[in-house]
Image (tube, rainbow, N blue to C red):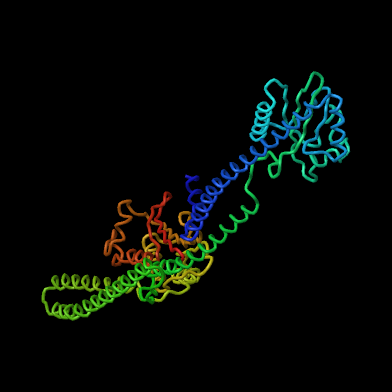
Length: 488
């Protein structure tokens, strides 16, 4: 449950945030796919170029080896001295009495491909009978002439054109061939540019900057577009919430996308029909009240002319009930205060004024605990009647009432809500009567005066403010009425 609640909190709720997150996900996936394909083609192109350059280097090495093989033994060292005095060549060449041990680079895919290609070319050019060793080493760890002499120990001019690429430190390809017993030819060279490194190709910085810039531009334009399109939706949602509080609010402007215009037009039509229905209902009840007053008055006069006292009492009781029902129905329509303006209400002050009426003469029938953090937007007269009805009901059946005020945030939708708890000390209600008691004219006790409309009116006012009213039996005794009023 906690994991689900945490997941729901992390999921974006607004259309704008969801669109931006989906766009970001789409950009990341699209750019990753495109970059992956581009990198795959780039790596293939670089690998093909590296293998072609490696074959050319191996062919040059085969020609150099063939040249030294063709020289008499006494001229080979002379040729090496001439190469070094002239500043070197493509290869650094030395003749050694034994194979030089190398601090080889760790194995990698490209390293193995290059070494195998060099071996294949040399074996093809020189034959498969030669003893051949090929490997890579870094310049700082490269041994030349023997296992004690490093590249850094020899004159720079001997290797300036073949091995040194300061300030770079590229790996050096070393090929050693046994020309005769006790005579090893040592060839060292760099791979041709731009394939001097054995590292796998990575996304170039400029390509990464291009992706970030493109994503930012798309993100910005999508944000402006969605915000522009959702502004009528936010206005529509706000109007739909306040529709129950102010049925006479101005019609919404029909603007935005065609779908939003259609929904806005439907809301305006619905508001017009509801307003017309309410006006018709008020006129109907007013007409009924006016039409019933005259016959009820005539019946009262005729009852006074009867001689039978018992019948007079019965007729009078029926007429009083009829008049009470008519007044109760009209009060139900009036107390919802449909046409009352929405204002900022100080609920703390409203509760204090209500408590003053019940705590006169030293009585302590109402106690208030907690405070509302800020004013509440609602209909002041309707809310006053709602609180008054609940307080009256609690004191009438439970002797005294304790009102607890909570102004907090609901976990479900993270909307601010004001909750008022009306707790009495009465006997409570049977569980099957907790909902039925809200029905008009329904009463469990006929010992106290009343019409059975107070709780129904209070719940109607709560619904008109977008909230609710529920009754609960407390485990330790008494009835608890919970009035929730969300802020909008």
